[in-house]
Image 1 (cartoon, chains in turn orange, green):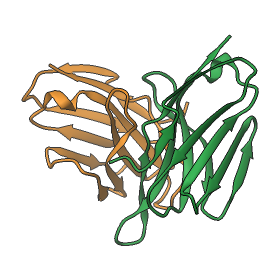
Image 2 (tube, chains in turn brown, cyan; image 1 turned 60 degrees about the vertical axis):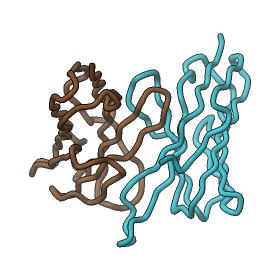
Image 3 (tube, chains in turn green, yellow; image 1 turned 90 degrees about the horizontal axis):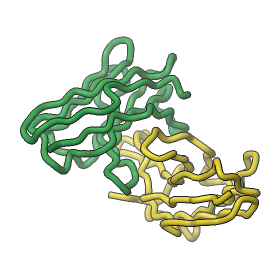
Image 4 (tube, helix red, strand yellow; image 1 turned 135 degrees about the vertical axis):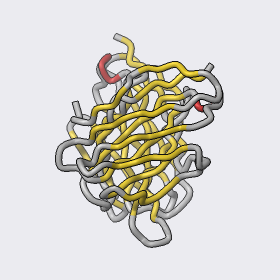
Length: 113
Length: 115
């Protein structure tokens, strides 16, 4: 167990809907990053938040947005869902910006119908 | 885009045998990490090797890094059925400001250890 918790664990949405996924970082960690993992693929970096500000972004459209709160928990929001958004969404936390080990949650499995 | 590419894509061995997985990457790195993922679960960090290191050990794991060939290998010795999982290599990436901010993962190797 890493201490990173994500909710919900599973959810089903239809095309065009919006979804919010939540993540609580491990105690003492102020950096949270989000990854999308399609079936059979490796995780793809979506973005990272450090001390409540977006600190880096991968190749994802603006309908993927996020927030980080003062307690360093985070949200991932996806608008106008598409079928290809079906994936496992992983949250990971660490302390600071230096490169190093990421602590992952168990993920939120999103299915878009 | 995927920075690392693991080889083989799938590997099936018997308990007690050694398992070797390889990873190739394209750009300069600060470090390379290996993660493990049980089916549909979160990733678990196994080991980190810095660009100025050539070999590192952790329990039954041995990682090598060859920066001239842009490649790494993960060796699991005396494998167990519980080692069955997907294994990913991940490389860091510096943004234009020079601070490392993301890991880039390969597609992974699915290891099956048969009892």
